[in-house]
Length: 236
Figure 1: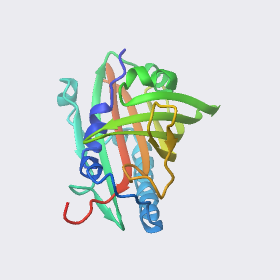
Figure 2 (figure 1 turned 120 degrees about the vertical axis):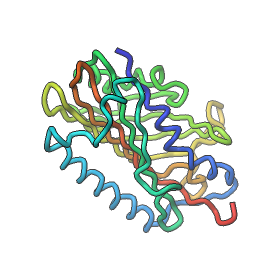
Figure 3 (figure 1 turned 90 degrees about the vertical axis):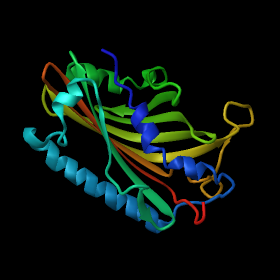
């Protein structure tokens, strides 16, 4: 089974960042109000997902199963066009759903937990990945990611990731960023991490929520990403 790449979804989720990348000369860090707004929004998302996961009939958000089985994934923006406005920041919430035939939940779970394979699966977005610690199905993971919009941006990101298997057919995972560093001069001997006051706000926070369900002789997979970025300066 080939792991369905979420790179298309991540590119769409990050489309609004391309305007932000045009202002690379502006250094900024998130306000406490923006961070509080992100965490409050993420808490509401996680509460909704917990309710949905509590019942087989609502485990995944409504989708056109026939369309998905034809190989046409569905991607939707859950925040208003352009992102949700917070003080000096934008909040983005995107959800994508796909169907992978002849696939089991166990196969998908093994691939999801194989972080060492991420640079191959998600190239060129993921440059490197390694597990810092593991306790059961709880992971601390560090990844170097590359996003190319108007310019190429490289970031070192650390995540707290938890997997949950509800039964042999259904499961979900929650990934929350705990640290995101923008890297200057990446890949050179002089590379270094920019401090919060020197970074450009391309990505301040990122939570990722996967849900998967086995039925119709395949696996329905849903991913929702909630991210916090700098706002677009007036006049741009």
